[in-house]
Structure formats: structure tokens, C-alpha cells
Amino acid sequence: MHSHQEYLKKVEHYLSDLLVTERLELLNKIQAEIKEKPDQELQDALIFTNIKRGEMGFTPYKEKKEFSIFKLFLKLTAAMTILFMLGLAVLIYNFTPLLKVDEENNRVTILGGFIDIDGKSGKFKFGDEVHFAAESYSNDLQANINLDSDKDEIIVHFSSGTFEVQNSEEGSFKFDCKLEKPATQDVIDQQVDFIKVNLAQVGGSNCKLYIPEDKKLSLEGEDSAINVISPEFNLYIDITNGKVSIKPEEEIDYIYNLEVKNGYVGEFESSEAENAYEINIRIKNGSIIRK
Image (cartoon, rainbow, N blue to C red; front, side, top):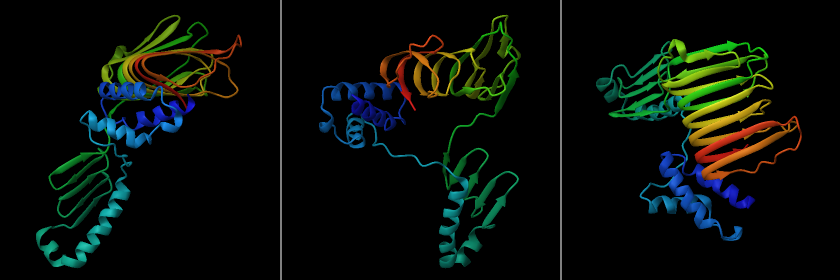
């Protein structure tokens, strides 16, 4: 079972470039097909996944390399050096200036704009082709809120987003978010026994959440990737589509209540200790894995 679980993790990685619905459809088909197969009969995960992708009309999976403007600039500089040696006179005549570096705006243009590398937006232009390294959000939202003993729950509503959740070293609820749209004044609602952060109206969000010890965090939304690191608080997650990664603290006791309707759940062992923290996660389509 353990080998099958590791195999499915690799398969999910090789489907990560597809839409959520497409990824889940393929993952469920593959899971059903290998369910009864012995470990020794499992084909290489990448080869098998690419066969199934081809059957569904998708291109084979290719590992994406992390975009680095400086590495790319070095490679382009090396290539251009060869071109300079072969046709320097022609290049000077047709492209002026050859190289322009704008350090203030983190931008490099080569051959009069034929190659344009914009570090701020992650945009790379080569001739008429434009590529984006990653989507970025430009609206900031930060807060650092002290919670009294009566205010024991933090509720975060969202439409889509990525969240990194960890303990607060300062004993206060702190968050640092990048948003697709500017936040309104009523995004934070403080009541007697809870505090609510409503990100549902800001489009996409990319947040780091810092939760005080022994409090309760509730994350509720549609599409999300959530990474939970060594929690020392109670956690409730309810999402429609997505993936939750949990890295438990080895010396902390947890009670797990994990449910995925369409997808799979990793191996988690609940404690019987009375002071164990509760980890409750419900996902309609997706996975819960242990890091």
C-alpha cells in the first residue's frame, strides 16, 4: 500500500500542469487501474502517466525549470558572444544599442529590444514571442493582531489561493498576503470570540499565516494549495479542489480527521492523548499528503 501511495504521489506530480478537473479525472482512472496490481508490476510512473496523458489527448509531461533572470541573462550573453564574433559588423548596423541594462527597473534589453527580459513582471520576450515565468499579485495586505483569551478562533474565507500556515512566535495572529485585487476596509471582522478575514472578494491570494499557540484556524474556500508546518493549534480546512501538505511536529500529539471524496489521503497516525491538537480536513477533489 505504501508503494502504491508513493506511486500516486509521483503520478500527481506528473499531472500538475493540467487543470484541476482534468488532473483529478486522470488521477482517479490511474488509481483504479493500479489498485489491484502488485508493486512489482507497476510501470515507471512517468512512462505510465505519459501513456495515460496521450490517451486523453494531452502532451507528455516535461519538468519545468525554475525561471531565473540572471541565469537566463548569462546564457544569452554567452550565446550573443558567439554571434558577435561571427557578425559584429552586421549586428551593429542593424541593432542599436546592442545591450541595455536598466538596474533600477531590473530590465535587460538585447539587440534593440529583440530580446527583452523584465525581472519585475517575470516577462521574457524573444522576437514576437512573450512568456511569463509566474503570475504575480501586486496588492499587499498585512496585519498583526493580538488575541485575548476569549477570542480563540481565526476564520479565513477565500475563493482561490495558496497558503503557508505556521506557528506565531510572537503569540499574535499575523498574516502577510499578496492579492490579485485591492482589499476593502471590511476584509477583517473582529467579534468577541473570533476574528474573520474575508478574502473571497479579492480574487486570487498568496498568504503566509502565523497562528498563536492553542488557538483554532478555519480555512474555507474553493481552490487552494495549503502547506501546514508543525502546527501547535487546532486546524479546520474545508475546500472544494486542492492539495493540503502537512508537516507534523514530531513531539506534538495530533488527532486526524481527514476526508477526500475524490483523491487520496497520505498516512497519518492519530494520538489518543487528551491534549492532542485536532486536524480536521475535508476536500471534495484533491489530496492530503504528509511532508
